[in-house]
Amino acid sequence: MSLKRNIFANYVGQTYATLIAIAMMPMYVRYMGVEAYGLIGFFAMLQAWFQLLDMGLTPTMARETARYQGGAVDALNLRRLLRSLEGVFIAVAVLGGSWIVMGANFIAAHWLKVEQLPLAEVERAISLMAMIIALRWVCGLYRGAINGFERLIWLSGLNVIGATARFVLVIPFFIYIGTSPTEFFTYQLAIAALETIVLMLKTYQLLPRLENTGQVPWQWEPLRGVLKFSLSIAFTSSVWVLVTQTDKLILSKILPLKEYAYFTLAVLVASGVGIISGPISSALVPRMTKLWAEGDNAGFVRVYRNATQLVAVIAIPAAMMLSFYAEPILWAWTGDAMISQNAAPVLRLYALGNGILALGAFPYFLQYAKGDLHLHVIGNFLFVTLLIPSVIWATQRYGVEGAGYAWLSANAVYFIVWVPLVHSRLLKGIHISWLLRDVAPTMLLSVVGIGLLDNFFVIPTSRIYAAAFLISAGMVLLILGSMASAPIRGAIRGGLGLGTRGHNG
Image 1: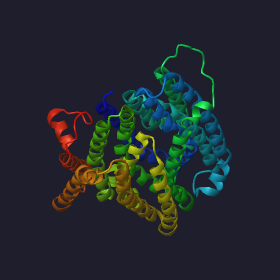
Image 2: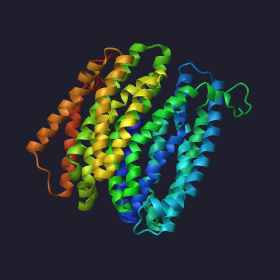
Image 3: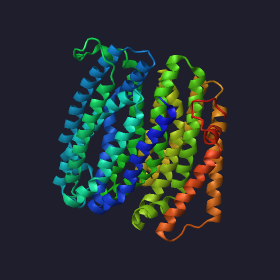
Image 4: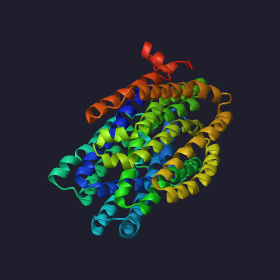
């Protein structure tokens, strides 16, 4: 499989899904109202917290499938593992979904600060959320297997179709059926059920055939061999949920649902920076795992560094644009001055934090591919011990901006302190070169670009012209970032594939 094509496919699928969700948000607010949109933000937060039940099994499935591709796992054991994980996932989905349904009345009446929507309507919506979350969570198992097989072009196509169904085709549903939260989440439930069926069928199509075609029974034994790695991943996933969702959970209790909607909107836009790390890591991790299993250390390092530059070239300019031009971007996008003023302060801070996060995640990929996460476990234990109290304190004292400052500061400290330590243990002598050659040039040129734009250009007062200016400014920063990357310059000049030639840093 071509790493370049897999990365491109991931970008197409995940970028489209992220951007279409952001683009359609003003339509959601227009049809459903701001307070109802706050329920959608609460749903996204609930879905993230549900990942605590994953126990590291989804990425374990992806890793074991990649190891099968590299010859380290045989076909029978791969099928046995999938069957065992299916049993666990279905059981946890039923139990977890049922728990949310039983708590729907408490959440509607005592947790959320609902001002306009009927409580019975909110309760029904939360019950539907539970079923959607359970189905999408089961989808993660099959996505993990398909990802491990590196069928990312197919997965990207499904992402495009699914995102179109969820975010675009719901507008005709609003027009002809209804716009209440119950109707909206009923529609989303139908899409989630269809998506689950398609992913399951594709996974079984990709699985290697066995000479004995009898059904593989559910067994506990296949889980024993991957338990240590999955528990390490489970801790990491739990930390990730705590780090990224604690502020959202606290604010869902503190803020009126309408104000929570503004916060959710800002975080959604800032998550656009995450489209940089997500698609590349989905393609990068299976390839690095395979290279490590094959003993190709030179290829392992080359892919790691080239992928770092690719992320830096796009993540850094995107984060700077969203931060520096937060209010104009929100205004050009929504046309709503109230939304722009309320969401801009949060967007500035979360965009910068997400930009740092996109680069700070790379040492984790090293550990994941090598199957040794003990440094990650230790680092994140210390990290979360310091971070969570600061998030709680800052959120309660300063509200949404306090949460933003805590998020930005935490990611900056992690990048400055922990990333070099991991590099020194796993790839000795690489950190200074990685920082100065793979990250710093793009950062420097992006800062220079923002400075020039700010000093020589004024944002037009017309919404259409403002949007055109912001798009052009983003393209300028992207071009400047590309100039800082030797592999990308080489790819542009001679069509070189990232990860297929030597590193020119």
